[in-house]
Amino acid sequence: MAYYEEEDLRRFSEIGKHRPDLFEKFMAWYEACQEDGALTRREKALIGLAVAHALQCPYCIDAYAQASLEAGSNMEQMTEAIHMASALRGGAALIHGLQAHNSVNKVSM
Amino acid sequence: MAQELPVIQATPTAALLASGDFDARLATHGIKLLRADAIETLQVNVGKLCNQACKHCHVDASPARTEIMTREVAEQIIEAVRRYSFPTLDITGGAPELNPSFRYLVRAAHALGTHIMVRHNLTVMCEPAQEDLPEFFREHEVEVVSSLPYFLEQQTDAQRGQGVFEKSIRALRRLNAVGYGIEGSGLVLNLVYNPVGAFLPPKQSSIEADFKRELATRYNLSFNRLYTITNMPIRRFLDYLRRTGNEERYMRKLVEAFNPGAVEGLMCRNTLSVDWTGRLYDCDFNQMLELAVAPELPQTIFELDPERFAGGRVMTGSHCFGCTAGAGSSCGGALAKA
Image (cartoon, rainbow over all chains, first blue to last red; front, side, top):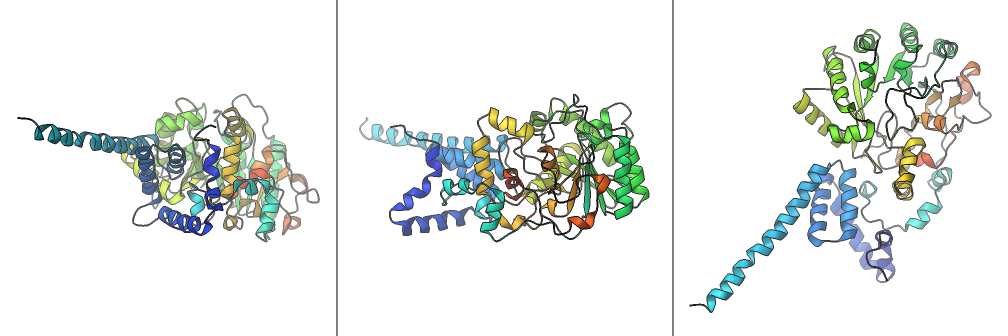
């Protein structure tokens, strides 16, 4: 059995086979989040792209790379968003170094 | 509209693809695609000769093509414009300026008081004997419509060929210099955005704002409107889709983004397309597929009777999903308000 089949992205609605009421609520919320609001669709698509990379979800990366293109972003902008996500992930790992320092310092003379 | 950002489709795709027939899809919305009462625009494709060979070209135009309109057909075009007083003559190609009858068409139509649009690729201005095009356009009050897929060199050259962006910027400077695209001049310069690849165009107003800002900041250039046009899955763009394994995905994207609200504004309803031999089509895309107007209607410009087209049926195919996807697409850009 292979994981992360591209075709599975389009089968997403099959999740609604069981407890369709929950899936419908999710879809209504999800789609509402995409609409132009205080943030534009383009900004939201770039946020989606960044989060997709932070989550390292291949479905979301594919979907939001396409969504960003179709919202008018170019590769420079998309790459900056990906760097933002990566920088935060790097920073989040690095700040935990203080946990390690604290742990070591606690038992050190 | 969720269909503009189809990140997750709640609707099963198989059902959508099964309804791939365009007329059937219209019928599910209770729509029958019929022509309007009047032909507003006579769109004339004077041939496939072009100084460029763009990767997305639905005409398959290039410097190697030899199919171009003769003077006899061009004179019949003008006769039809004179007799039926079409409000707009929309001249396209190829690069229409390379046709020896191009300036005749513009001069004669202008003398008849017709509004003239020219699909001008910008770089043709750098060809021999074409340097005076800005002045020629101005003299005949031509509305210039020019493709510029992006405001950056890399994307533009990727679609239209090496060096095209730099030449396009030079040509835009020349057009601006004679007043085109300058507020208050009355000389209209509209740009056309095509996606550089197998994806749908962004919201027209959003990308127009980007183009205005970036072209002004980077190059001190101005223009009037930006039209977004969806790449049509025919000819050279279809070859690209097949070569890159994108055909199924792109067609699915078009079908899933079907927007019934775009149908009313489709250009095939009030435009008549003429090819280089004088044959008639419902649009330039049908022309390239050699899908002529309905057989019960006049087939050539030589026998044209516009009244017979009023309320007539439009010939369709799966490529028509390209004009109804998302906000819709036409030679005048997006059709539906996003």
